[in-house]
Length: 366
Image 1 (cartoon, rainbow, N blue to C red):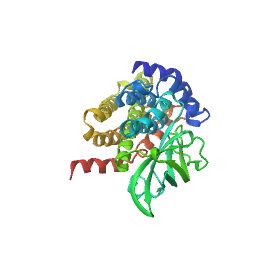
Image 2: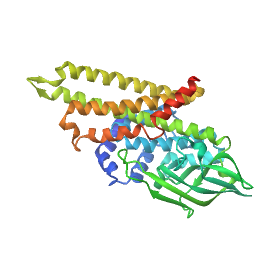
Image 3: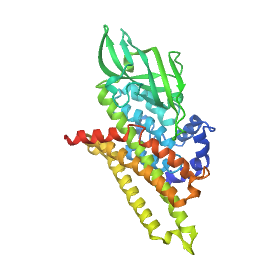
Image 4: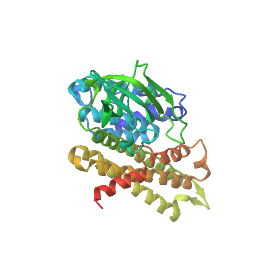
């Protein structure tokens, strides 16, 4: 983590506001991450990566979240695609794309959500009309993270054969030079603004048969979304830690009534709660990341738990830290103003908190 933090302090902290305002090219910045090896953390060594696990990628996302949480959303989509390729991709698919992703030569995006199909991806209207050579994909995807910078898109579509709709499948789409893939900027967001969230329209886009991921598309979507939850949860942990650090530093230095405000029990207890809950969110996120290999049957459950808890902690902690800082916390000059906006979106992006509760309850079989 020390290596990650040193990099983040040097390369991310000075440009965090420029990334949020998009005055600094996100694509150029991600290429720097790739060249420095930080996009290859969880990619196997045989494909040019570092051979690490999801928890290593989560720890990096946590450190990133301390400085620019929006990058956490960007990394969550990239990580979802990487893990899907590792688990479900053919050898040809992995050897073609993973080395490029490792070096930051291409970026990836997961295309699932639609206007009428968010968490309910069974309601997908995007179709893949099967042909002799592959399929023609037709549909409109919304809130696509990394949409405008992704050369590799994994698209969820319902297959159509002889006019009949069949199962949902995932298809690899190389959009770099495709005239049948159009990207439109999505609406301006409250927070996490450094991450691109776009609309993508596929107009009878041709894909070869070997671009299809073998297996159950719904299972693959669920797995991909779970990976995204863990990485965004890690960024939320980083945000909460940054908020706590700001509050503690202010409590140590701000004087009122002849003493620092950190000497007041009301402030002390508030900070004690923040510290405890931050550690709980961190440990739950690490547990989720470890479970992808150690207890894969529980991975989905832990992913929902950590996303639910960490995003809530991020929102509450950024607000409580702002309370400790008072007027200094509500200024746009303070990182807390940005963190407060970012944290709310963490309860919505990659699946709302309510959907996480539904998933957790399902696992309890009540």
